[in-house]
Length: 122
Length: 292
Image 1 (spheres, chains in turn yellow, orange):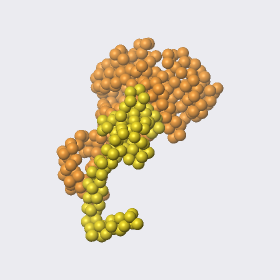
Image 2: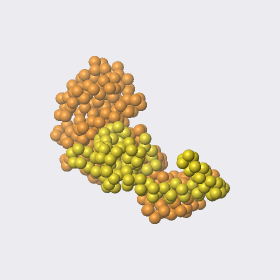
Image 3: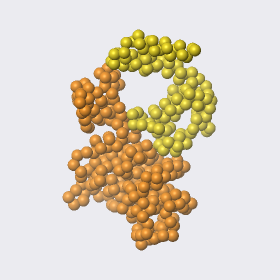
Image 4: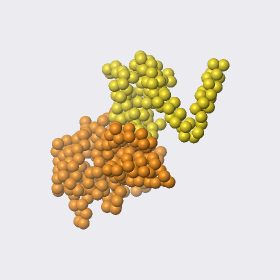
């Protein structure tokens, strides 16, 4: 589940964000407690708590005292808009750079995208 | 209930060797600590002093604000299980060991002890001499966990256990720590297996403190810089280099120390990849050199 490439609490936060984006976790749905999470993934509870706290700070989760943590109603929209903002920088630009390095004309890339677009609307 | 540990300028000399060398260390109560060090680095000596198995001669060791040696109030609250096994003695029986622990440990939980013995498949009515190495380790761990001592230290206690038993131990340790928070110190060579259980890590080498930090923060202080050799060399000039590897024109250099966000931006510009280092690799780099 986790690797050594980034802090574990960061990976926990990303995993929960992905669940929200994919719809596995819905608005106002309760998420696992940090203790449940720690036991399940065999990690220190303080590390798990740090991941959850990051999500609370970002407004993705909210706390209900004595009950637990829940998905913010606008979390999915917020995450979608963040991912959309990052899409060109994170996905498209590296793709263009790679195409240049290995000598694929950008026209070919555009043509392929047009084909995929055609299939989608068919 | 949990116990703080405050160690100041602790030194322990054996004939011909300084086992602990002017060590100062503060451990806040209620966390799980990983104590890492090579063989002969002073881990066991350090834990023995905290557990009042030995008298402190230079420096101070305070547990919950008091010196633990010959301090009955404290020694009931401190449990150290050593791999060499002084809880588990040949000639004794499993039942006898549990009976003694029950008498000496105010927070002892009989049901929990029984559950652990079942989990690790240690027969109750057997002499210790007849147990396998793994079963002896499991019995030591059972005593360590079921004592629920506010300060519990396990020194290489699970070395003889096979992988399924060790993972069962990690699970039960975490579960019981969550239900009954206490200060736990684990010393281990199986770093990769347990690193994620540690809230903080203490690394000692040749009796000296090398690092003490949150596990994740410590991990983030190390970085592997990978890319074209010349760019990597330029980038890492002036940094603490722990190790390097070269493959053709590509070079990987492991550095230790904070990397400023500006420097990270430079790395990206230069086509360098920065990635955190596994705790085990960091440990190897920080403690290499002649074995003590």
